[in-house]
Length: 464
Image (cartoon, rainbow, N blue to C red):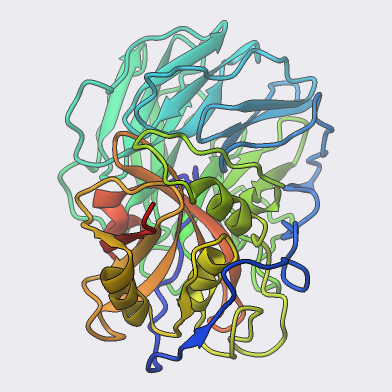
């Protein structure tokens, strides 16, 4: 998200091993949301968090995203910024002009990044397949939409004159367009963590890449000022921003932890605070010393099915119920949750969502047990097939044991290229036992191992 995410983007959840045998308890087929997280999405207020001299601006219109917010870009005078969601819906704040949103029925991949033109009168939106959509005075200089990529595109950076841009893939591959010069890449080289973002130097003669492990890779005249590669971090790094003079940079973790290098000052962070606020991006303030952190889960969403693969008759209600629960854990104590006993609870959450959406589903504490129940009573889809929105998603290698079936969630949106946005319980950055309900993605089904730490082994779909 930078995802979301970002793939991101994007949000990277921890894989939680469920250590208990199946615990079954029948839940009602439908019921009130009262007493749970009814209508809450309150990880932070506001969803864009400023540190230092980074002012928060009001939106020009009500912000009701129909998909996870994945990226932001600031205006050059520092008096506004744009936010964009995975469907290409753009919201403008402060003096950021309203230049339009994406409305493309042929959109095959989710939007994952954006960049503003140097004069602030335009921006590019970029899909995970490398499709580039220009708005305002932004010009299209090409894309990777027709290429067979080794990894999804995760970021874009503009050249100083706005007459070109770089795209970067999760594998570290660099693609140049317009007057953007090629200075090297990590494509085909070993990476300890997938690339999650990039930043260019002020003169456009170099760039940095950052990995999810905090590793920094420098090219052209981009200098190395340090990294978190090989060091312990509490949550995966999700993005970076360079200082105005190019002599330093900030890295941000999914938990809001900030790492400073070179002349980048520290203005504060969210790292180590509870409830944990999932962060998906960092953007430098153009109005003076400071930076913004983007908290996608803090918006009140009205997620709409994209209907790329069709929907079941349950899809809309399942998504509505699941998005109403996006919030920090509401009960104190390790692994305590509103959906069952105090234990690892991603499966408890998922079965609760189906039950309270009209699909009578038993409650199990083990994801593999829920998979087996779906296999006998509903439908199982292989990971090679695009699921319907509202389906279960199972992470791991199979339902056999807690070591192979490690996590699950609800599919909230799909795209033809195989990308998903999910809603998951017992998820997010921070210490195990004190997690919440988060949005995850967009991410490719085929790249779940790199993005989520675990592959997908199947989907569960309610019978129509």
